[in-house]
Length: 126
Image (cartoon, rainbow, N blue to C red):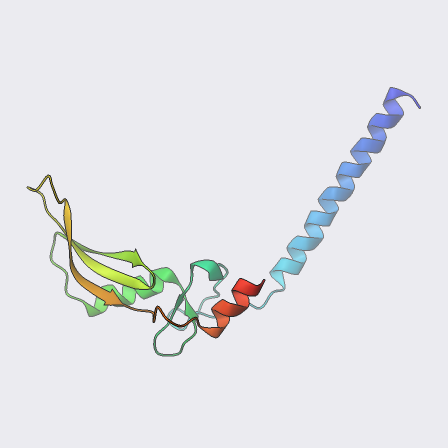
């Protein structure tokens, strides 16, 4: 087998690999993603979703953040931040202090840290 024939064989193999990727993209587009209860759009990144309190369904992180911002009163130097483990906090930034640049003014426990929702246990099994 000459060099040219081997080269054509390799190129054909690459072409098949690209067709395979195209098929998996079609399969991925046919997945039924859950809908966010706040914005009614599909949640394609379930790993970044947060359990919505009222319906126990997944919701977009940004939608939950906006809902908390609308329900809480913030001063000009305050911001809502995710603290981890399903809790948010109202953080007050201090301009003059070099020791503590911010203080957590209020902690908002949004998710129950002791229980996993059913949709999240399904996600962890995959």
